[in-house]
Length: 324
Image (tube, rainbow, N blue to C red; front, side, top):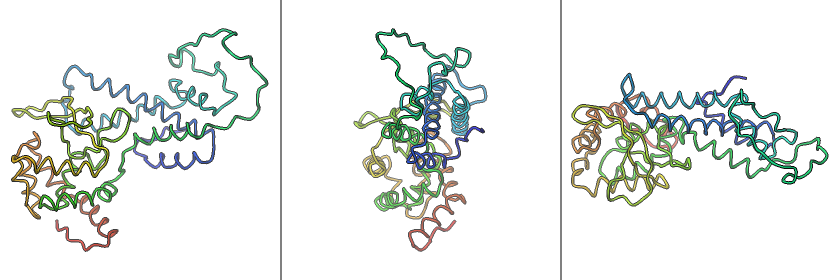
């Protein structure tokens, strides 16, 4: 059977649906996905502990494709018998009553710790039940939930715009700028929502604007690899970013961040001038990227933005006024 692709997000919806059918094969599939998450976390920690700059340089695009490769690699490593974690999880959840320890991968397949026990410690074996016991539905749904956390909150630019538009519209009105300008900045910072930093427990940090913690921040935070430019030299580093419990909190803090600091006064009241808004952000040192304003403007002028906004307006039955 061919290994699933990490870009096929429909597989997660299918898994959620199929768990309702009490199918042991679905549990095995979900356990395999869970094992893949474990392998991916190992690969991620390995990447974060690099001791020197990559041979071919560093960029946001490099990080994105490296992350995609690691995710696909984790699926490949977990396919078939994998490293054994999935099989042990299936057994723990009661997905296969006839599964015996002899079926665990051998030392030639994967390094599995040997469990030592005595006859006094283990109950005596009874008659083998020909039918598997009921699957622990609560535990199974928890595993599905953990797998789904890793999938992006948004699988397309259209979904991203659909969900954040009301929040962006509100904060844009408070700042006196165009809604699409705020969305373009969030899209640039997160790759249309596909690369939002995750918390340690797998939940989204909801940080759409790349705001770091700073000395005054008292809320939750997440660690994330980022590229900063200093004296014209790009350097990768691990930084602390703010974490929010909801999108509403994200946009509220974004507004407070810009409005409470005189440094960003020039960002406000740009109206429909998206380029002016972007250049004001750059001149205020919102980001160290020397092409930050150009990139925001390019996102705004992109066909992706045009199509996503048009679809939102059609769904919301609002007149379209986006002129590119």
